[in-house]
Image (cartoon, rainbow, N blue to C red):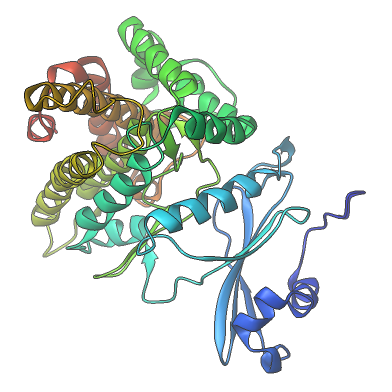
Amino acid sequence: MTTAEGFRVLDEKSLREYIKATPSLASKLGTHELDNLDIKEVGDGNLNFVYIIISPSGSLVIKQAVPYIRLIGESWPMTKERSYFEATALKRQHDLSPEHVPEVYHFDRTMSLIGMRYIEPPHIILRKGLIAGVEYPLLAEHMSEFMANTLFYTSLLYLTTTQHKSAVAEFCANVEICRLTEQVVFSDPYKISEFNRWTSPFLDTDVEAIRNDKILKLEVAELKSKFCEKTQALIHGDLHTSSVMVTQDSTQVIDPEFAFYGPMGFDIGAFIGNLFLAYFAQDGHVDQGNDRKAYKAWILDTIANTWNLFYKKFTSLWDIHKEGPGEAYLHEIYNDLELRELVKQKYMMDLFHDSLGFAAAKMIRRIVGVAHVEDFESISDLVKRSDCERRALDFAKNLMKKRRNFNTIIDVISVA
């Protein structure tokens, strides 16, 4: 398809020509090697076309957004302008956390096309590693660092209100993607929707219970309001375990097309919530000789370490920049040590409770909403799968309703 404004969906043949005509891409692959390109389409996501291009002297990834949701088809239109926000967020997050975000080589707004670093094997999608029972000793360290850097430096703890408002205004235009999240995370799971699905008939009564749970609906309304109204920092917006690629010593965060200025807890909660989903799915992946008990303990340790290291790194950045440009807490007002500690404790406790609420919302939607997770879907025995899902649902509902009662991440883990 070609549209009037010059956008066309590329295939392997037209992509070759596009690369040849684009110096910033051709140079990464070696200008003499452009007839020897190995091109593979690998988009297993819900939204985009993704190509890996390898030449004898280089490699890169091309990601093209199309004007509909690939998972559903042209019946569910979706702005391809999302690629502008993805490219902008990738560049900003790469600047703030270069070890953990791939570099962008090229962006073409007309074509909704991003050329970026190819995250080479043996990197795999974290979710697949969690299903396979692989431990990643540096995961909590790396993810807490990514979140601390990207969230702190885009918040009013570091920015002036002028800088912050200008950035908020730019990302407000990613409204269509935000509305998708509002629908699939905060609305559809709590009502009858044609897009919802679940492991039926085993979870039928659980799904009905969610729709009839008044307290849960009160809580999810508050979380939706925070998501829509709280422009705290530049968030990734879709930070689940399939947006992270890993090896034993590398962690790379990809796919920030849902990025906007929103509540920090939405990113922290998305990541932690998906680790809890992996935890509850483990019993469905037990086989002879591996009861997965040690691995479940590792996941819980990773959840605890992620939050605790994030807390440490984030507050440390705050301390370093306490006399910096940030206008949330002006130094001449908050220069008393005791007062600064009180401010930090309050801010971090609020953030903790936000993170728990959003973690719960993300868990619930992955079990009863439109888009499910491979952690559960790869359990072929439906009775076993629904048992795992029910335990995750019960935990998530309790977490959402009682999140303010938890003061530490260890308290949360103790009820999992």
